[in-house]
Length: 427
Image 1 (cartoon, one colour):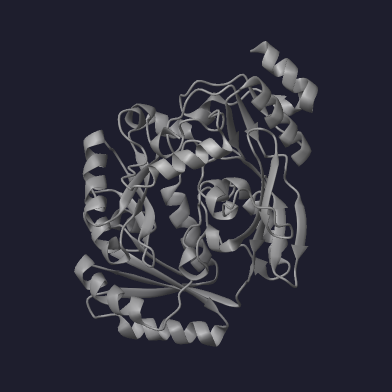
Image 2 (cartoon, rainbow, N blue to C red):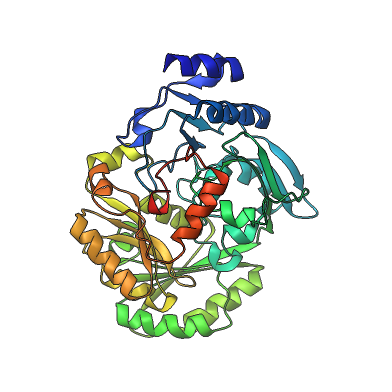
């Protein structure tokens, strides 16, 4: 493949070509180079070159979530958007932001905070996650309780197709393709339809005060609280239930745990916190965290679930990370039936969440998947040992839209050159 590097060097320069870290790919065959375009035009040129030579391409940002999704097929090169890291426009008055895909959320958040604004996402690996990777994996996090998912926050997108053509939708320029809603289509597409280059988001104001009510107890007692809480007028920004093992790791107590986070002006937060505390029964314990302890708690939840920052640790253990979705009313019951020692967090409003099993076999994963499916939900493997992923269906998709998804893939990438095999049904 020396010829590949030689050809690409003429497109972007040799300083934009580096050898990939084998650990990023979790045991999969490693391509010769990872390409770092410096501009959107260079990205388009790289993809046009790949299209011309029918090279298979794995797009990425920082690589923090390359272990997620299907095993995928061998690729000829990786293309990283890490150097596409500029904020294009921050319209403070309109509360919108346009930025390149390689901008890291950790770098962006302090800039927005200077204007008392935030991008309301809480993704995995927040110190490394790029905007493009967050959208490509639909990784919203706990803030979806108040602000919705990424499809609600994303108002514009630009991406480069496999043939090197630039496609745009929403934002300041409306140029859709073949009638598709590109923003919804690209969200969660895992790099199979195009390489995201630029994004426009709706922002939200930061709030004056933040407090979290931590409620611990037996599952039955917690369920008796969750039902009326969901039907109440209270408006937490995050409302999550944790497994006993994760709660113990965070020193929150022994038992199933509910986290209800409120953010607003101080009187409003105090009123809602008091209202929730009044609902807590005698067989539950409650405490209120605020200030840095409030923030440290939510940071700790993420670190607990996503403590393995790359595929390499997963390759050495039998632990797995899975995304699950069940009807909201079944969220607590799903956690209740997990194997002992499992770390889990589910969002009460959506029933979507993350589970880390300490040791998992194919049979254990299938049992958990069957339980989710029986409740009307799903289980998708995110991170797992390569052998386990190769021995079972990663996505667990049982719907009737696979034909439509394959048709869309054929429309955007007829040569199957982008992230081959990484998505549902081997797409």
